Length: 159
Image (cartoon, rainbow, N blue to C red; front, side, top):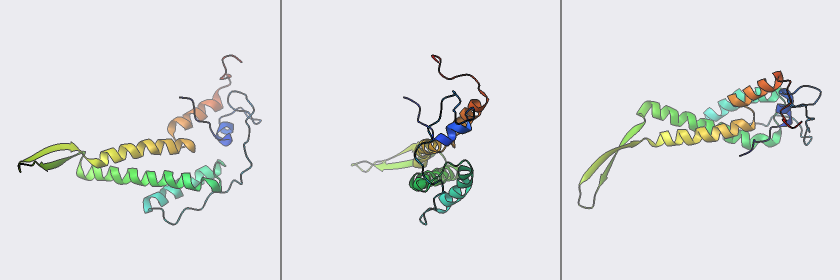
């Protein structure tokens, strides 16, 4: 699977300067969107609204947000809220739960299963990483940017 394309602003942050990326290639600035942060939706959950307030200022400073990013940013924030809720549930109730089933003959069987919140937290975590990568919010994205800023070598082995 190939790399996901980064926004021009992220390429330039890790680049060599003068509009070039870490490999020395000219960065296409892309469409001329107005770089204004979107307003948060009124329906965001409390935890999602707090995450919105936490990440938007940093993304705005990097000139990465535009009004059209509202839906993806809202999805990221709500996914964060789901992750937090599921993680708190697992912390409170444990990673397993008891399930009792009654057979047709009336016999009860109890077994231990993974708590459903564990699955929700895992799924939300995967989605969260995917959304976060779109905005350059993952640790690996940050490290790639840092390496790109210090690296004077061309990334193209055929160049």
